Image 1 (tube, rainbow, N blue to C red):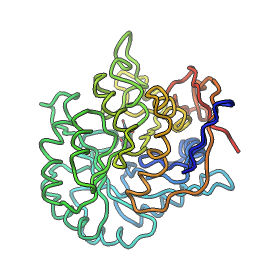
Image 2: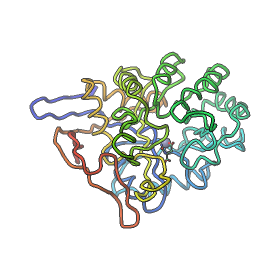
Image 3: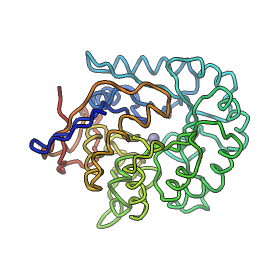
Image 4: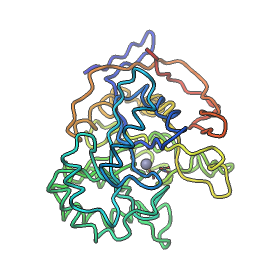
Length: 353
Ligand code: NCD
Ligand code: ZN
């Protein structure tokens, strides 16, 4: 275990972490955001919700090459690709993923649940034969766990997904490896804790640090609007307890999701928080507040790799206890992104080597 805390200089050194849930997009934005992620993380699970979505291994390999070409020189960062599950996904594609060295999982977006999910799965039960193929080929299924029907209140959509779909999926496919992505509720924490070891979960920095007041109290703050939406304080506390528990089912997935500032600051702003500029700093802040910095390394650097059956990283990264102010925006003119905590102070800082 590489965890080293030096109280005199206030530094924290841990094994290099991975990000198990990340959006990097394409083109100009990709170049800006991938540099942030590659600085801190060795690997990241890359979400496939492009327009059009990444639905074939062939497309994933083209996208992977675009990501590699956008990396800063000398970067060893490895993008771990995923495919977007649709109503038309064929069993042959599952086999191709199982045989691929570059594609690691399928992502299930219920149709209409979030950004670029129009091509997602409209009838989840109809996808059961595909889940069976994933179970047989040992291909993980990553799930955006929210129902989408307008009858459901937006704050209840995760719990409804557990009750209406996830419980039955885990019963029917006990050997299917599932990552319940970006947990936001106590209900989801309890579900994952009581499920088999084949069920793991990612937790974002914003859901550990903020409750729904951040979006709505004292003014509407669109940069805190992501999906699944921030919930009540007791849910945040349940997430923090889970993340800092040392339970290997819970691991780091930022869900860093860049959107141009003007598209978020709009009458109908889009969903997604950008956190890649300070991902580890934000997690360190949450863990420190819970007096659990010693649990950060397992959550950030071990549990996800173990779940995916990949080797743990061998290098280390260091954070220093030093205040700095987050820039108001990142990127180039016409392609500006407002990061989480823009213009505010962070108390940990990642040390560049
Ligand atoms: C993500 C995005 O922008 O791609 N948005 C978000 O609010 N998290 C999609 C997602 O993961 O739901
Ligand atoms: Zn996401």
